[in-house]
Image (cartoon, rainbow, N blue to C red; front, side):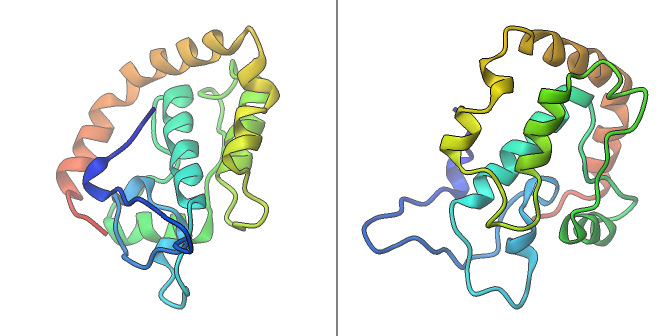
Length: 155
């Protein structure tokens, strides 16, 4: 389980929409950043899971820019990729899992049940993908620390 209880909210009967723009910039879903939105739902958590999984597999975040406005633009555009050599040793199933979570269109993004049923999570080779990503983290850890120091702000 992954949670930031400082930003958590219990949704009850009849409460399926949230309106507060909050979250850590690199992990926030595009619908939270959309000023024309009419609220957002639980799908934002699946987006964040996609960002975390991407980070664990590649060793760097999918939306990285020189400034916070650039990061926000990348997120709102859904602009990310799987560049070589970082993704060369990552399975197609893992890439599909991340892609289906980092889907800008909320209606097409996997829900929690679909994510849990995804073939990659049921595959034995999942640890190989994660270990490959952990090795990449050693390479890019300094870059991430620098970005966090320069852009330590909340959305």
